[in-house]
Length: 296
Ligand SMILES: NC(=O)c1ccc[n+]([C@@H]2O[C@H](COP(=O)([O-])OP(=O)(O)OC[C@H]3O[C@@H](n4cnc5c(N)ncnc54)[C@H](O)[C@@H]3O)[C@@H](O)[C@H]2O)c1
Image 1 (cartoon, helix red, strand yellow):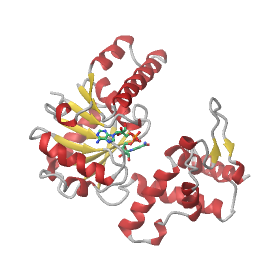
Image 2 (cartoon, rainbow, N blue to C red):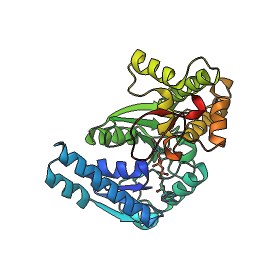
Image 3 (cartoon, protein in one colour):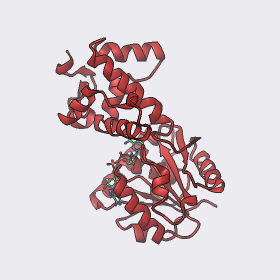
Image 4 (tube, protein in one colour):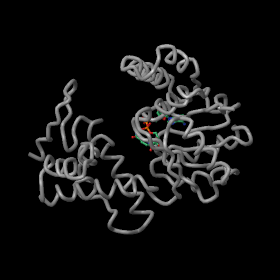
């Protein structure tokens, strides 16, 4: 039997997570504090389903079926009452997540799995905000969720084997490939990705090569679909910096300290795609990759 799923947070990740669960037949309640954000999420899911229908990867009827499986709610307490699985994908902020999990502990049914999509916050710490840490697990989807195959499944210190097995099984039902890892700073994905991005930024900072050269070496030499500087712009330079801070604090090792150039760019609000400029500049309506004037 497929469990009812509640997804908390209807932003970039939450709408994608709701989409893939509903498309795989799970009834979904999408919850956000903001009604406009919920409306925007439904519009985004509809647009993405339209694209799947247009490119032949989804039958027309399946679009209506998928949308029919999603309801929305602005209240966690009301939205999770009959959930068998909750996937929290709210803003990446430790205090906020601890508050949400405390509330989930009080409102979610017994036996419900409490998963979080956090990129960098300790699963063990989030679990400790509840009286049922054995039911708390990391379910780290990748962006864009409907396209990316991986789910990094993260065992908290107390996560039970049964909960982990259920999440592995559910991930497969979504057509994804789960990889189980343990809860240490950055898990696996960001522990390996962020130092690579930081090293690319150091290479630019030390003037070893330019933006295009660094990205081209990694694209053509390592068959990466996107260079590390372009990827950093896409993720958001503020997000990259905060994940490096988590690695630096968590391991106490200076090798994870964010490059001073990254720190400067974040301070100057050059955050990449979302602010219109990072290592590249982004003009509305243009898909051309143009290096920021600062690095020419
Ligand atoms: N964006 C990415 O590429 C990416 C990739 C993997 C994991 N993540 C993780 O996913 C989570 C969400 O990231 P995002 O990029 O979708 O963020 P986002 O800013 O796009 O969306 C966050 C949403 O959470 C909502 N929210 C805030 N407080 C809430 C509350 N108390 N209850 C319900 N909803 C609340 C906000 O209104 C917003 O709609 C974060 O933990 C992030 O680290 C992000």
